[in-house]
Length: 155
Image (spheres, rainbow, N blue to C red):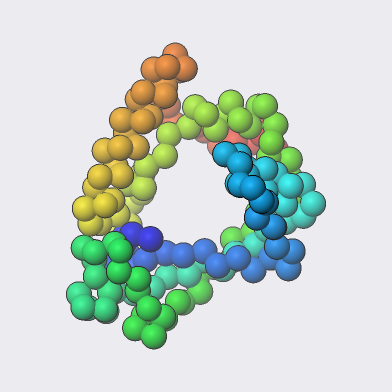
């Protein structure tokens, strides 16, 4: 977890699984076990998570610079702000794979009041941009922002 701005404050975000049904971690782990697990889980039913924030308290207990430091709940308790529910669905389709392969992700694709902060996030921004340009170049697909209609076609 890395810190982000939340208005004039700083937070870390976390998702805590709350689904009644838990996915099992396969043995041995394969390169695709995460995608196989989510496909299996969402084929059988929904997945739910508590979306929580932890607020920055001080540099000693909740460092903004040292991302290796865990923000202990005793110093900054998790505050639930929402429930994230992924509905039952087929996520392992070829159409969804191709759509996802041509998306770009950046933690900085947000409002200024939600910007990622810290050296690790700054490095991530540069790395994600370079990976996106490389992947789109290799796929010979222009980088563009998907529309709501693009997402609706996947339902």
